[in-house]
Amino acid sequence: MEEEFSMFMRRIPTQEQRYILADLLRHGREAQDLTQQQISDLLDCSLHWVNDMEQGKCDPSWRDAFHYAAIIKLDPIVFAEEAGLRVSIPSFRK
Image 1 (tube, rainbow, N blue to C red):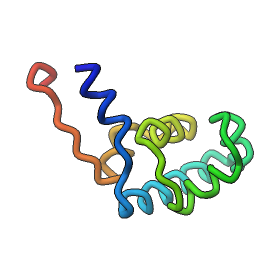
Image 2 (cartoon, helix red, strand yellow; image 1 turned 135 degrees about the horizontal axis):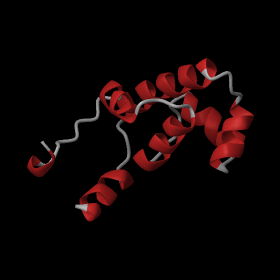
Image 3 (cartoon, one colour; image 1 turned 30 degrees about the horizontal axis):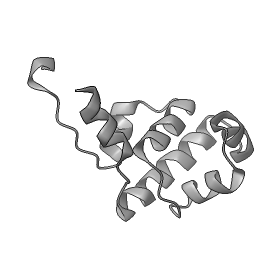
């Protein structure tokens, strides 16, 4: 199970998903009244990367996208659904 999740987290969002992610992350950051510099400090990444992420110009891993979403307090389930991510729930979890 953990290996399957790990494989998912290494996947790269599609171009369409990148644009959706960009909007979600930018609007979420603005709603939290955070700057891109603050996000880059919290994520320990470059300001350039945050800017590219919010413009849909980079290929983030899902791990990076969810980490960013957690920092700006986006619900992970809502975030995944909005991004068009379909993750099946194992039958033992239903």
